[in-house]
Length: 468
RNA sequence: GGCCCCAUCGUCUAGCGGUUAGGACGCGGCCCUCUCACGGCUGAAACCGGGGUUCGAGUCCCCGUGGGGUCACCA
Picture 1 (spheres, rainbow, N blue to C red):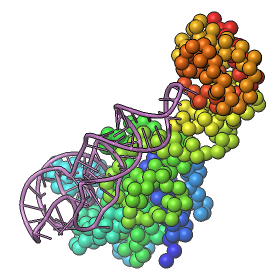
Picture 2: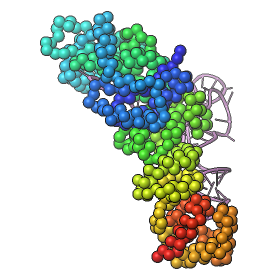
Picture 3: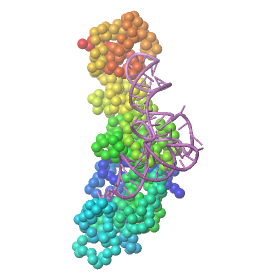
Picture 4: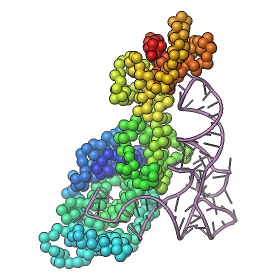
């Protein structure tokens, strides 16, 4: 049997972390089984659904590299079909009209709550004669749930889950205004789209029982369900706006790489022995639902960050430069061709010290800065009169000796100058660093010198010596 | 409250009846060293509690406790 999975977000905001992982797992499962990964926008009515949110979700999926195998289906465009299914259910007695008003329903719930009874529709109109219907009131259509027996879901993640049918109430399929509810729409669409595996958040597990009854009523084959444990915030509660950055776009903006996010999300609730760094190809080869854990996981930015640092180092210098230029410009640096090539040459030393693109950009700024370069507080403190004097001696020695402008020669020369000055190498190295980078922290000195180039090194040295 | 799910270091997890309970992130120390990282070595850190089953339970069962989810004419 071929596999078809789907990701079905409701477009009420950006693509959040939990949704991203659900999408990833669906995508991986489909790719692993060489099946199809579909997209469906659950916009059944709702003024909550917006075009901007749809775009944000597509953007997020795109960034993560989760490509769908067909254009997205908009649930709102399937309304006629949903109504048609309800008509069929009505015709064969699997559904019925209910004229209870919202007020009556609310009162019913309050009463149940007060009497500490389960809160559910009491079936008022289940067997009542429609002739007794109040006039001028539009009914909703409810499904006629079995009242005895049990519903079993053999969940691919959670295992066998059973609920007594008596726990299930006759939920609404069609609202009084004739629009279909989510509970009906998902089932019809999953069936019509030939979805074989419904992989979604754990928060839908209870819905699965009700939806199973709709499949049953229509005589449709039940898809395999796989309910993923939720991702919680650091406090252990379901992710929500109060946890701050919950949209993948926020992480992209902070300079996280999609491959790092994918790897992190994959390991949240799924594992493959002791493997931590897992490429997408490996993930596709290894992924399966039986290795998905059953307990909720907390989102840990530190671990994401560590993974990101790893993938940053694996990126090519050229692509990193391309990603950095806009960030440097946003930081207020005009990136000239000369500065860009200095950056390109210095990237290897820069990237192994970075964790995210934003801090990479900050640490890279001195390469694209135009002279005289900005000097931070720490570097300014290093560049006192004594240090400037050492730099003067060093610069002069550079002129006299003219060492080959290559790493071993440069280092040998600098060490010799330090010795001649009668100071430890650090006493010369730190001022040099401050002069060349304007920082107290930077990649290796000689890496920096090679990346800057001889002329720029001399010029920055001159600037630093003259600095007051 | 009803129903459902979950429970190994702080966090993510390995473990699938017999292990010195492993790895990763984070944290401490040491080494490397021109700063900071990287890297290497190393340390502290966990089986929620109680009953069973068994020669033997982190692993199986039950109860408790704790956490989470869900109970709409939202999705």
